[in-house]
Image (cartoon, rainbow, N blue to C red; front, side, top):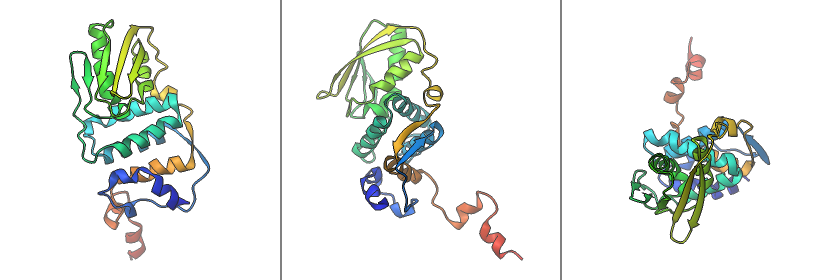
Amino acid sequence: MALEVQQRSVLSAFANDDPETLPHTDHIPARIRMSRRELSLIVERLVMALDCPQGMWPGVRDFVLETIAVTGSAGLDELERAITAREPGRTWTGARVTDAGIDVAGESLLLAGDVIVNALLAAAADDPTAPFIVSGLESIVGSAGLEVRARYHGYALTSEADHDAGTLRISIAPCEADRGADVVQLLRNGIDVSGEQWWRIYQPSNFALSIESELSRTHTGVSETLLHYSV
């Protein structure tokens, strides 16, 4: 069963990494309740393994979590798809602010969401009546995360998507800030996912970690091997 899941995972996005360095398992539970902490760790490690610049890790991670908080396992489906569809070596800093909004140069909304929503909030502070146009989207899926972040800061969004053109036209209106629209609050109970989906994202997330070796184990505490051979 583990082999079948491995073949369906996002491992193809890490063609330059050796899957033999990853954890393997003979048993995957039918269902798993993923906590916010586990989701946060796995998503951030996936982002790290995709060579995202260090300063962007928290923002990309939190936007993905904000989306998952309101879409559940469907948000994880889109994360898998976005990672798999991403061109190897693609830059994370290609987005450019335009007169009408922002052009993300072929990135998915889910992975570019933090950059988009920050530009949107800055534009809303200047003129909340002007529409905000997101262009150059590889995928439109993920606008729920924009709504979560905007609501937290006191803005309600209405979006019109053009999937063929890869654009999102967003209308902005001030509203009462919702301090409950926060990742810690929204994911306080975690989310329920299939064991297969959990494994498909957990296993490749380990590409962000150091390969286990005798040397790496000595950096985590007293080496069991050294204890065993000590006199």
